Length: 174
Image 1 (cartoon, rainbow, N blue to C red):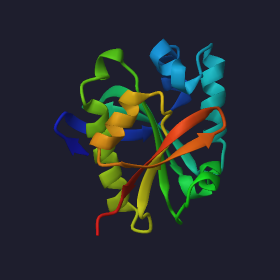
Image 2: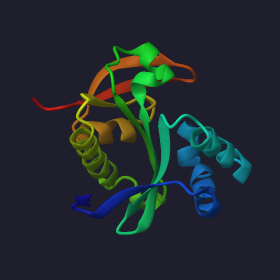
Image 3: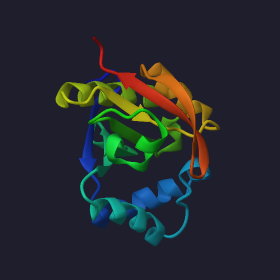
Image 4: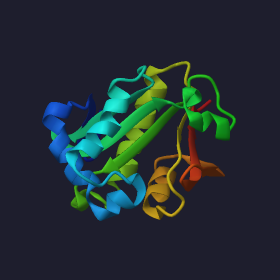
């Protein structure tokens, strides 16, 4: 996906080659505050394995900007996720989780740029999907702000297991 920052793409995580990098990112205190996956590589591996061995509803991906790892993304069927019990889900809703890994990538507007590009792509490639959703922790104001800047609206505040979240929704235009 071409963006103003460069060519952005997602590729499925490869634990054999990506685990050390993802573990390093998960151990960054700014990331751990919301992901709660700090610890040894086995902690990150368990999180990845649950998705990789699952039913395909969630795909863990490495985000690359001009070929350089920039973040970790999860793209999932929100309508088939426990999240759907907390909002008026529509068939084929697609959810997004993300973290920008390198600290220097944060706070520059890059997250909103990449979120907008991914949401555009999801809505273009999945005609049955009417909306892209996310549920960042309300305390994570930079994340909530990035979703707003990427064209998402805050539809509700949700009480989810372990957090109060902003339900962010980017609807198909039209």
